[in-house]
Image 1 (spheres, one colour):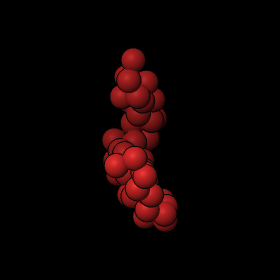
Image 2 (image 1 turned 45 degrees about the vertical axis):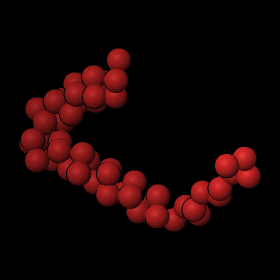
Image 3 (image 1 turned 180 degrees about the vertical axis):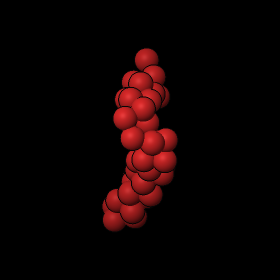
Length: 50
């Protein structure tokens, strides 16, 4: 089971209780937040075996 299979019912419940727009906001915000967090990571070091 993938995360989509687990999150689908949760998002559906949120949409039923509030609105579809409110339920979809986390789906837009999470990738943007992830992108910001990734930018703060240091670059990967090259392996000496290459």
